[in-house]
Length: 162
Image (cartoon, rainbow, N blue to C red; front, side, top):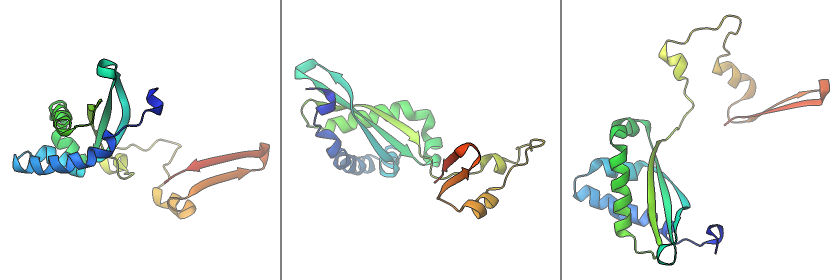
């Protein structure tokens, strides 16, 4: 059986395991781990790793995307936090031939911010005045597909924005 056709059980159990871990971290006074699993947006990469030991063992990867403030608070501890999360999830796992082989922590990007402008350090480029976002939104609207059609050479440009 190929990894693509493999049916996995563990990924559907991960949320239940995280609920138990949240309670455990609260009891054991581990707020950093609890904050990561409670506030993280979870992505699971099924079949991340395969080992042919014991009839085949499949390892999955979990990525916790956390808000910027948590990311910055914990970024010096990621290696140990990821290892702890992986080990703790695997302690709760009773699915045969499946485990969590990797845990990653990433920063969740929630908004398109104008960080360059807000820094106060952005230099205006001569001959290329920036177009303020407010003007673009007045023209195009927010969250719509932008289409520019030109009869010259039958060119069509599509710019997808969210």
